Length: 357
Image (cartoon, rainbow, N blue to C red):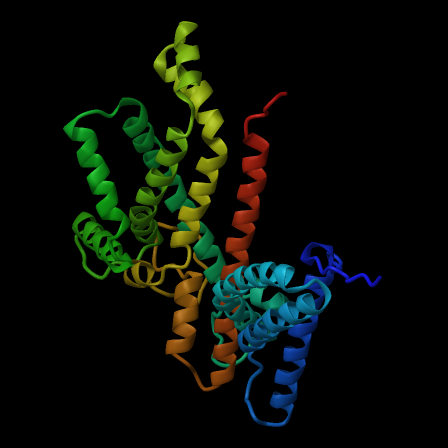
């Protein structure tokens, strides 16, 4: 009597858990090696990190399905295909960011030195110099804009969530929505017109004017982010506080704000990241200078976005020196935003409500 083996798709072998990641890494390294060889052969001028990762991900998509088909069978291979497609979509979405960071780092590393952070461009015509004046200007202008925007935006959000009812609240909400979409150059023109009227002279260039222009862009972002976080606070917490006889303003201060502080801080950092790279309004109202200026109320003040723009737009005798400074300025701006985001996460974790069992 002969027996016939019955094939069961559920009893096939299984790949190790690390196998998909190993196949992905091998695929990426293989494509990176191919692109490097093409660059060395003179086929391409620059190394294309986005292209290497894209074709490496496509190679992984084919390889994981083939390997899974051979080892695990067709049933599991279909599941691997669906998972690989999701990963491929994720990598494709990240490619512009990866390409941007790679390009800025590779081009900005040439001038990312001590002199860049300790010297200004005063008296510098060709190579040398640094961006200390622009870094200080960016921190001062953005810091003052934050001091203006956060209290106004937070109190507006509290009014809309806790007190606002009727036509006034709807009008404020409508104006916030309109301000969210205004072009940045409009904010710069508003600050320019405001200080022209106040000081009575056209063509004024002041750091404080740049802060006002940035605050116009920051306030609606802070309002929207804070409003959403405040609405997430459960009404039961408010009602429990009212039941104990706590007045409404104290409930907002002691219950609502501490509960939502983590999200509010994240929203504030997003608002700072939204405006710290703005060039048009600062070019209009803050101007550009090659000297140090610590006074927001006196004379033009440099900033990193305008520093990068001017380095590209107004190149001197040594073109490469200006381009290197521009790339280094862009890299510094990215690092500042990254530090702000990390700081916000630490602050949010420290002030987030501690939940018991």
